[in-house]
Amino acid sequence: MTAAAPGRADEGPEREEVLRLRAEVRALRARVRAHPLISQAQGMLQERYALPDADRAFTLMRRSSQRFNVKMRTLAGALVTTPRPDERTVLWFPRRVRHPEPALGFMAQEPPGGRSRGAVLGAVLDRTLTVVGTDMGNVQTVDRVSGGLRIERHTGLTEDFIDFFAHVGEEGTACAKAARDVAQVTVQNVEEDPVFAEPAREAILAAGSRGVHSVPLTVSSRVCVGMVSAHADRPLDTLGTSQLRTLDALGAEAGRWLAWYERTVLVDALEHLHALGRAERGARRGRA
Image 1 (tube, helix red, strand yellow):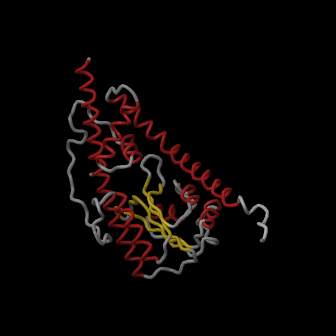
Image 2: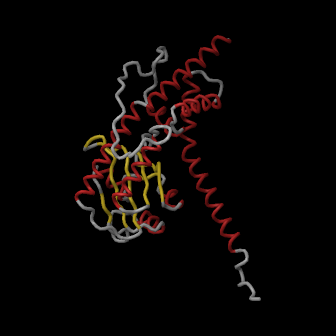
Image 3: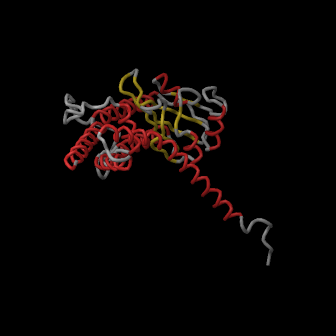
């Protein structure tokens, strides 16, 4: 019987513990990033509708979030960046004009439960990876509170990558350049391209990406509302004219849909939140 090599017996458990701790740290960082924004939104609601405490404000936000399938952080961001309503009026947006949902040619079939924001962004990512010919990538949207880009969907990338690029500023990455120029950007070789700041280059290489193609999601030729990036485990060749045109059309369709979502679904959620707050304040006055 051959003796086990020294240190091999507990190598598996030690690695599992390291991975578990890393996951906990990533989750903690995500909560820390979201907590100040949600707390700010809670405080605004508490003051605006004379709510008894922050917990009640959170409950109203959660109800609106669940009803319209809007992430809490997204709802909180909209709340703190939207001018406050006239509290004497029933409606927050009384002059709003509703527009029909834009068509999406890149969605082959309707997802179960309808076109949620997550389902649409997932379809954008899938289509982009198919066109570029890879299986790693992510979708970001513009952060309406702090600017820059924030990751919303991803596949094939490491958790360390997602943690490092959770929020991207205006410099140092291919996606930042694509957002700034409102144009597609191809990085054929991550190791050599000067677009990357060194920490970003190291994080991308550590995730196994050697080539990147970023496509802005646009409302017009001058307005970027998001980004989809395909990562390859090899240096990328220049994309063909047909591929670039397909991705341009994809970016324009997805950008129009995201703008519609902001003006419609997200505003519906805010309107509902306003109604909940007014009802809560009215009920408290009635009990006084």
